[in-house]
Each structure stands twice: as C-alpha cells, then as structure tokens.
Image 1 (cartoon, rainbow over the protein chains, first blue to last red):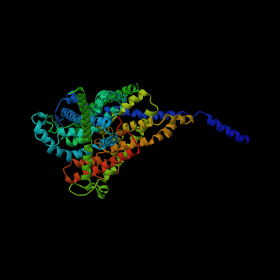
Image 2 (cartoon, rainbow over the protein chains, first blue to last red):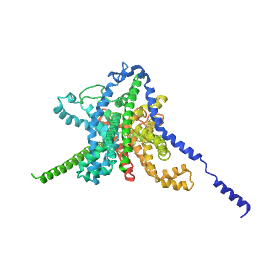
Image 3 (cartoon, rainbow over the protein chains, first blue to last red):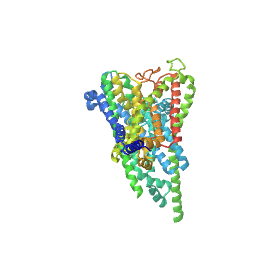
Image 4 (tube, each protein chain N blue to C red):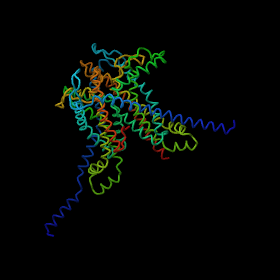
Length: 326
Length: 287
C-alpha cells in the first residue's frame, strides 16, 4: 500500500471517528414537540376565535344573553335560553335512554356473554359509531319520525297524557325525537368506554366473589360494578359531552323552533343546531356575533364536561393498576 | 320444609336471577345494535335504485329535472380529505411521536389530556372557528377552509392512535439501533415509525373515515357547490353536505338522490372500517 493510500485511509477513519452531529437529533425533537404542542395551541385558538367573534354581543347583552328567551334577528334581540334549554333537555333524554342500554351492553360483553359472541357484537357497536351523523339524520327524517309518530308517540300520549310532558298535538319532529337520535349517537362511546372500565377491574375481584359461591350476576354486581362505579360515571359524563355537541342528526329531527315548552312532543332547538341553520343566513354583524356567542357557550360547556369526564377516567386508570398487582 | 330444600330453592332462584340478568343485558345489546341494522337496511333499500353510472359521472340537475348525479360532491369530498391530510397527518403523527418517544410522564399526561378534551369539541365549533380564521379573512367560502376544518379535527385523533401504536414497539429495537451508533432521530424515523407504520396508517384511515362523513364543520367553510370546483379558493361540494341539503329539501327526486348519496358514503366509511379491522386491531375511539 502506498503512503498516499495509507493517508487517505487514515483520514477516512478519523472522519468516521468524529462524533455524529447532534443537530439532527435536536431539530427532530423540537419539530415533534412543536407538533405535539399544536393541541394546546388549538384549544387556545378556539377559545380566542370564539371570544373575538362575539365580543360585541357580549358587551351589548352581557349576562342576560344566557337567561333571555327572545331570539329576534330583525329587532337584533338575542337571548340563548331556548337553545340552552333545548340542548339540556335533549341531552337528558338521550342519557336516560342511552345510559342503561350502554352499561347493560358493556356488562353483557365483559361479564355475561359467551366468549364467541363478544367480538362480533363489539365490532357492530364500533360500526354504529362509524355511521356519519348526517346519514342517521336522513334515516331519522324518513324512517324514524314517521314510525314514532304512528306508534310510540300516540301510545305514550294515551298512557302518560295526563302529565305535562306528553301532551299536545303530535307533529313528529320534536324534542323527544331529537333526544332519541342523540341516544343512538352516544350509545357506542358510552358502551366502549364502559367496557374498557369493566375490563380494567382486576380478576382477583371476580375470583374472590366466585370463591364465595356467588353466581355470575352476583359476581358482576358485588365485585365488578361497585368497583367500577366511578369509571362508569366518567363514561356517562363523556357521553353527555358528545350529546351536547351533536349537530347534524339533531338538527334534522328536532324541529328547529326556539321555544321553551314542557311537552316533549313539541319541536325544540339546540345550541349546535341554531349555529348549523342560521350561520350562513346571518345578515347583520350583531346576528353573526350572537351566533359566535352561542358557539362560545357550547364550547365552554363541552370543555367543562369533557374535563370532568377525562379527570374521572384518568384517575381511575392510574388508581386501578397498583391494586391489581397486590 | 327442611333446611336443605330451602337452601336448594334459594340456590335455584339465584341461578335463575343470574340467567334473567344475562337475558336482559343480551336484549340491551340487541337494542343497541338494532339501529345499525335498520339504518343499513333502509339506506340500501332506498339508495340502491338511484345509484347508477350517471350518479358517479354527472352534475346535480336543477329541481324538477330527473336524473343527474353527485360526481362533483364525490370528487369534492376526496379533495377535501386530501387537503385535510396535508394538515392532519404530519401534525398528528409527529405529535404522537413526541408523546411516545420524548415527552416526560407529566408533560405527556397533560398533552394526552388536552388531546382527549379536544376530541370532545363539537365538530360544528371547528366550522365556526375556521370561518373566523379563514372565511372572514379572505371573504370567501373555500375548499381550503373546509380542508383546514377537517384537518384540525384529525389532529388529536391521529396523535392518540400514533402514540398508542408506537408505544407497542419493543424497546429492544431502539436499543439495538442506538448500539449500532445510529442517531436517535434516524432510529425513530427509520426503525420505530417503520415498525409501527401499519398501526399508524390504520389510525390515519380511521380518522379519514371519521371526518369524511362530517357535515357540520363544512356548512360554512366548504359551503357546497352545485358545479365543479376549478379553484380551491372557491366553495366546493362535499358528499355529506349534498346529502344534508337534499334531505331537508321538499322534493322527492332530491330525497332519492340523498339516499343514494348516503349509500355511497356509508359504503365508503364501512369499507375503510372493515378493511382496517381485518388487517390490524386498533381501537377506533381513543378515550
């Protein structure tokens, strides 16, 4: 080997010995950090945009926006109470229907069902979650509402007609129909979150109850459900968060009339639907401002509800694991 | 009655009770999945008649003229999804990489928490925000605005699934690569992400299927369009928007088209979901 070749070889060895540049590592770390921080930025961005878009309305109407029930775009008088009421009532109906069904299904899927049937049902529930809201609304308009109008509604009226909530003429599009369609939409999420919660209950709990001679249902009731109570509550609150923000399907079946009526057969209106329906029709600045403020109210409430739900669910997840080890 | 028979009675009652509850919860499960079957049945029944070649190749016809299709809406939805991917995929995947590979436990807890809260933000709110950000500024509804709204919805979805699947990559893979002197970022990009790529793609596809059916965020961003969109700065049609407009219209002809559109949309969404489930097992809904 000539001297020149040796020199060349030594140089290339030395080059290889120099520590690699840290630049790539640092740059990549910062790049990913920036992207991860995007979620923080997004939440701030939403709040800021909504507050900016509604600042004039907030100044003009103040707190009375939340407790006034006049919604008159022509006279520029805006109060959100009918929408807050509609959102609250339709979500409550949805929870009353969806919670027992979802939790019972989750219990069935984790505790009681034969093993072979579990996966098919789990997949079907996930498919239900995948149906776009607008298609459920379409089905609601042309299939569910005519059916409700012909059978269950008259039945309810006949039996419970003496109460103020099931009186008056039956139109079809109504608060009750809205609540039912929301129930269909939130059942999958409550079911799958409840299922996760029930699955995280340590098997020791179950084994202990079985060892005492409990039947399958007694094991579920005594050892599993009482243990999972807080987490199941979290699942319900998460469902509530979804119910409050549900837009398309509700807009298509609730009737879209800003009124506060005791009867569930009467049409209603929700915060999300009024934005969906009237946003592009907002001809004056104040009208648009009022709709932004509706958005701000909806955002505030859903953020709060989701915070509570996530806190309940996350503290469960952290609390459950050490006990399972013991 | 002797002690023994009484105990036996009690035992058989308890067994009966257990069976009864099993039956009741089984019925709940049936009620829960019944809407899926009903919606699917009606969408196929009412939609199949209006699906033909014209539906995929023609523009919508004016009221009263039979025929026409939703070609522009189908292409529009694909364009919107492409635009959404440009924002949602890089931000979501890289953010997920940070959570799985770099973040400290506390930072991760906070970021994950915020991402989950963000997932709970009603999709219509995204529409309002993007309206304020883009539409008001440029004084026009546009495909860009619609794509942005959908992309932002995708970010927390993809971030969470990416993090989950990257955490499944065994630590020994990283250690082996680092022991060979490969830079950390190359290890992550070429080995960790590549190993997890199937799961990441699954997450992306599920997110696309989810936002592909979204209507609310498009109402006042993409706005809809009865013609072809030739400029992304102009309003664009989307399948869910078209279904909504037709569904609430008073015309029978349009109702039929709405069902046909629903059939196409549901088929697309279900196909993605089923294919993804066949190839991998990833949770569809991060909690």
